[in-house]
Length: 93
Image 1: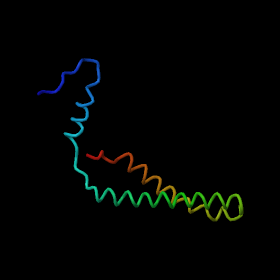
Image 2: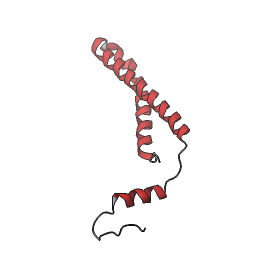
Image 3: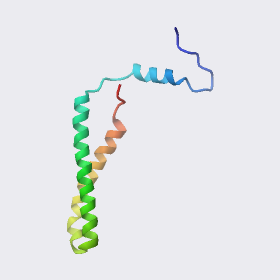
Image 4: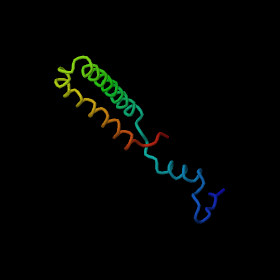
C-alpha cells in the first residue's frame, strides 16, 4: 500500500511527516543522553540554590551581596547548557 497522495497547497498527513522524520533518524546512545541530562539537572538545582541565597543576601545582608555576585556565573553556565541541549537534541525514537 503506497503513501497517501498529497493535495497541493495542504500540509502532508501527520503520518507522512512522522514517517519521513523516522526514516532520517540517527540512533541516540540513551545512556550518554541520561548521563548528560543528570549533570544539567544538578547544575540547574545548584543555580536555584544560588538564586535563593543571592536573594536572601540582598534582602537580609545587602552589604554581602556584592561579594556573592561571582556565584551567578554558575547559573549562566547551567542555564546555557540546558538551553543548548534543548536546541540541539534529537528526538527520541
